[in-house]
Image (tube, rainbow, N blue to C red; front, side, top):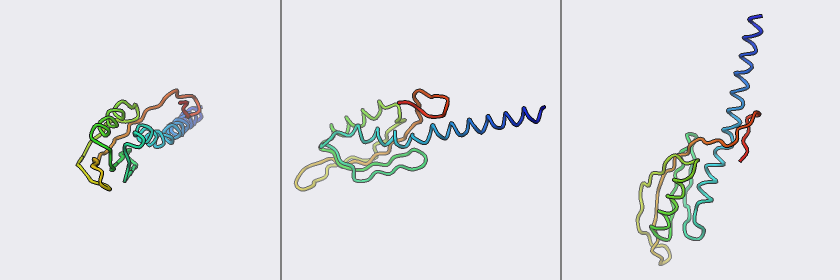
Length: 124
């Protein structure tokens, strides 16, 4: 009898692990979506975009001015999927005669789940 109970506990543990994996599978897409959808169109452009396994996203690019970049950073800080943003560098940069702002920053993602349901997936 005890062996059956232990086997059921082992199975329940495995099911929980599978549910947790399913919940986390979609997170990188959510992180990237937050980065891209908050970017001001025709005012900011990425040159590099790197996402590592720890949820760190390294970005570099150009913006029309400091206000555009600062506004973007503030929008990201409000996201439930973003833990913090570290601006490493901003500087003036001329591209085809335009005085733009070059930037480098890192973004740390955080796990956030909406509407967990019993099969290990999320809605929303």
